[in-house]
Structure formats: structure tokens, C-alpha cells
Image 1 (cartoon, each protein chain N blue to C red):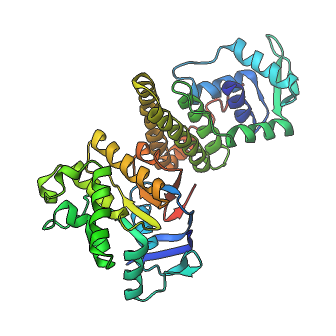
Image 2: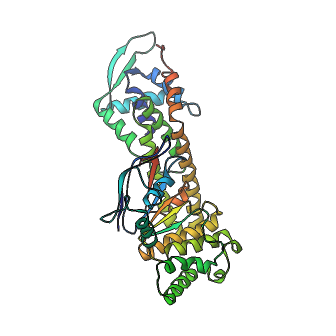
Amino acid sequence: MSVSRTLLGLLEPKAQHGYTLRRRYDGWFGSSRPLKSAQVYATLQRLDRDGLIELAGVTAGEGPDRRMYAITDAGVSELERWLEEPEVPDVTATRRVLFSKMVIALSSGRSANQLLDRQRQAHLARMRDMRAQRQRGDLITQLDADFEMYHLDADLKWIDGAQARLDRLATLLGETGDPAEGQP
Amino acid sequence: MTLTAREVGIRFGATDALRGADIEIGEGELVAVMGPSGSGKSTLLHVLAGILRPDRGEIRLGDRRIDNLADGARSALRLTSFGFVLQFGDLVPELSLRENVELPLRLLKVRRSETRARAAALLRELEVEEFADRRPGEVSGGQAQRAAVARALVHRPAIVFADEPTGALDSVAGELVLDALTGLARQQGSAVVMVTHEARVAAYADRTVFLRDGRVAA
């Protein structure tokens, strides 16, 4: 889900080919797990099927034709919904998605601060649930709750640190603006 | 009784510590206040508690406007309606824990027998009864802080203000203090406004207000 929504965010400024999109994704998010071509094209087909993007042109080349995609109005609405909805705090998955959301928000001129504020509140709500669970439960429940609370705490510290450095990140994204710029 | 702050601002020299902060604390509600260093957390607490007078905006306790009260009236309000737990307890070092806890009731001229009974009951409930005749310097930080919680709640205030109440304690002692503060406050229906930089502390509250640059951000 997060890869498809991130691609949607990257498509928002202008129509692009799958190849360009993949380079751009890898430039910002792919350092540890680059996208495979097949994954990009399968995702684009799904987004197209769901009406979130549409074909904006086909360029013939030496190899297979290059299909250019543009985001639709429904795609913009879906992107905004994704950015505005806090992630359900999850020990393993939250950070990667949060980073993607933050970069897409910043690079599109949306408020990354508000996004992170909403996420902090979602994390704090989960922390309250865990604390209540810890108070009611036996030792095993308490240790289980402790584990999650320490991880939530780490996420929250990351959110604080990210917010303190949003301006610098925005500048960096501006400088590396479009890693695929100038590519065919 | 609801405590409401609207568009509260205060400036120290060239620095705007609060720039139009809005907050509402419901009756018996436990609210944590978080935010980066310098965001105005402690200033907001002091303004809400009538320790600092804001330059603009207004603060009401129930229907009564309290930010523009004269100094004497504000002191009286703090004594009758508010309780305080600060990072280092701020108990009177020359008095025993028991005398510290009795202090608000003595200042309020509550009958001696009732004063003694109420203080003793709280000291017992917070499990510091056996140290009640020692001075703050003769007990651990956690025990002193639990006595500070008892002192903050003994006169059944409408609101307790707590500024980093566990900041000087290890996590186990901190949890005992937080259990005491939030448990007792809920029991007697006192609201709590608690400034903290720790999410695990904020998790004791019903909700968290996040400050940034002197305003409520979320």
C-alpha cells in the first residue's frame, strides 16, 4: 500500500514514465530496498485499474513502447487521504511509511508538521492503551506492553527529531529535487 | 470546574514565550502538555496556575475570570483551588513530610483534628506513612515526591499542576509517583495538568496537548 501511495505522490507534480518514476523513488526511498521494474509496472497497472492514475501518452522507442501516466482527481483525493490519516502504530512498519509520507508531503508543499503532529497523537493514544493494559495485566502482559511502549517511545523520539529538522530536509529535497530529471 | 485559556500570550524581553495559546481542561480531566524545549510548556503551566500574569488573552476557572485578579486574590485562589507538584518536590526542608502535607490545610484554617486525619490518610495511601516524621532530606527522592503529591491533593483542589513530576526520579520510583498522582486525582475528581517531555509519563493522562512556538499545535 505504501509503495503505491508513494508512487502516486511522486506522480502528482507531472505525468511520468514508469522508468522515470522508479528512478525517482529509488533516489529518495530505495537506498535499502530499491523497487524492481516489475513491481513498478504492476503497481501502475493497479493504480490505473482503480482510476487513480490514467494513461497520458505512449512514446514509441527502440524497445517496448513507454507509457506515460498522470494522476487523476480521484488519485489526488486518495493521496490526500493517505497523507492525512495517521498510521496505526506498528512496531516494525511505521517508520518506513512515515518517512515516505513526510517526504511526499514536503516535496508537494503540504504540511509535514501537521502530518507528524497527527501521527504523534496516534502514537500517544496507543501508548495510553498499552499503559492501561499494563496496569490491568499480569507480569507477562506487562512485559509485552513494555516492549511495545519502548518502541512507541522510540518512534515518538524519531518524530520529534524529524520535526526539528524539517526545514533542512525540505532544502535537501529541493536540492536533489528530481533524481530522474534529464532522463529519457 | 473547567479551566479555559483563550489566546494567551506572554513575552519575556524580546521573546514571545506564548503566542496565543488556547487550552481547555475539563473537570477531573488529566491532560499532559508536551513540546520541544522552549515551546512554552512550563510558561503555560505557570500562566494557567496564576503564577505568571499573561500579557494578553484570558483565563477562566468556571465562569470566573482569573488572569486579571489582584495578587492577593490570585494567592488565595492558588491556595484554595490549585495544587502543585514540581520536579524537585519543593517540600519545606525544615518540616517533616507530615507537616508538609498538613501545610495547605493549616493555611486554610481547617480544624486541627481534620487536618491531621486527612494528612495521615493520604500518607498511608501513598505508602509513606512510616517516614512521615522524617524531613524531606532524610527520605528518598521518590518518597519525598509522593509526599509532594499528598500535599498537592490534601485540600482537594480543582486542579493539580505538575511540572516534570518524575524528572528527577528513576523509572520505578517515577511510576509510583505517577500512579499516586493520577490515581488520587481521579479518586477525588481533581483535574491534572502535567508538563512532561516523556511519552511514557504522558500516557498516564487522558489526552496530550502538544505545544510548538508558544501555541497549541495538536
